[in-house]
Image (cartoon, rainbow, N blue to C red; front, top):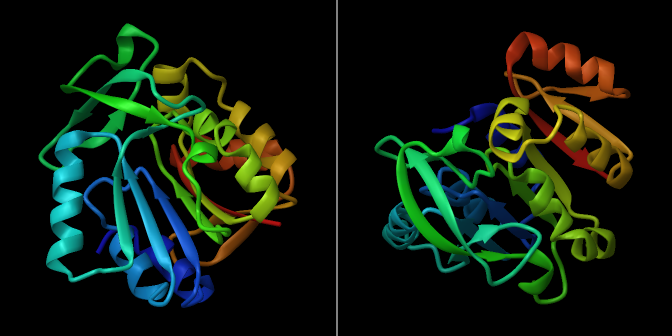
Length: 219
């Protein structure tokens, strides 16, 4: 059981026929419950680390999931580049790209990049979960056409530290993009309840106290 507060929200909102994207799927801790909830739909699970991807495929297969497709790619704003991925730990967590020496630690692997707008979703996308350790802005920029066409519910980790360390972006930059795309932004609290975010200062104070937060963004 991983991130029960996020799972609690997904259990309230995901419909059986939904098409869902798990961007930064790691070994499938969110992919598996998403596939259970979207039982008549489909889950596209994207993982950058080739090693974690093999575990993701194994977990999908061992759970007998026929409605989940694993994709080994680094989700960014460009398709077809070869990039370095660094990750740590037995579960290959913190898999990230980096534009500075700060992020060059852990296991190094290479993978191709993919922009979600180049992937295709059989006519719909209902929910997108994004957790890519500082690469969230590039992931969203590569999905702008899809987001503006389908308005998927977005569950996204807001963690300023890797954004500053690995991508060199400010702690506020992701918020400005989210606010431009989604009129409703909520912090997912540890008990699964939602706290509305109406301005950056409110989120910034929460992040200062808690380091990172998962957000639910809707149209």
